[in-house]
Length: 309
Image (tube, rainbow, N blue to C red; front, side, top):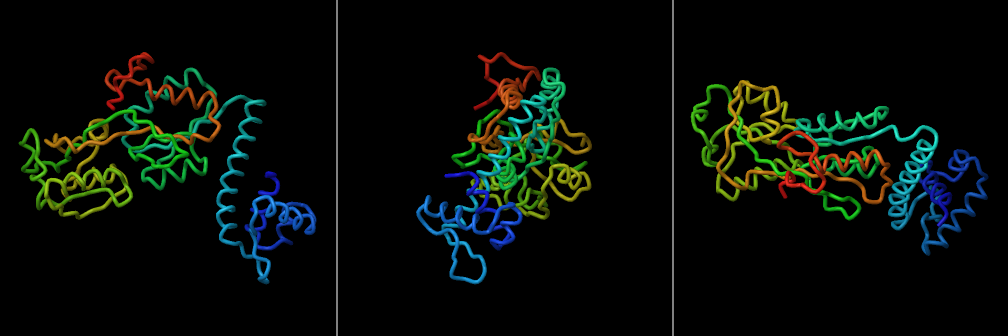
């Protein structure tokens, strides 16, 4: 299958007419029509319905269009990467992050930048499962650090550590005198939780469902920073990752352990298995795998106990 034929097909769909597509591609319309016929002969089914006055793609054509877009984006990225490696060397690393990972990622980047001094690092928040998958599929990021396990055969999801979830109480809340909370302590309390589509919300609600506790959800949020602000202003109780609670700058709230083994989450490193990953990206992945959460230093490659999985 010729990559140019896929480019032609995508251009036809995007431009809605053969004439406009031919102009964009700088080829003649007859040549474009011939190329499309060859592509259809190659795949064995029609991609465009020619019985209509306007361009309409077939059901098979819609699938081909989506897959061709991914392939062409991948082809473009690989071509750009090879050109950049030849001319300038590896210069960019794009990382998708959840909020709580910032307690350790800057430490890894500090070491990473000592080796790759000229690399430009882009950090993008990818909070929900849709955010992560979209960013990886579109090649917006090289890797993602996420608490979402991604059920996608094209994406490798590697567990890197497990952490507890803890309760965050408003200042002077009557529960702050307890060393450890039970899930039943939350019954009837105004509760703040992540919106639908976030794994932390799913983990929390599943734990309460197993315990038979009904939550009085009053606020749904996207970012833990917003959550902490609401708690500080006595608008409810919440449950957040322990690492975020201890490393955030919010100090007026009470952080309490929860006596329930199901209140925890796993954090993963994810990347597209089919994408070319430059040496600098692979070096970052290795650094994340070898980082010791307890000491805050790179551990020996043969001592990966910190992963917690």
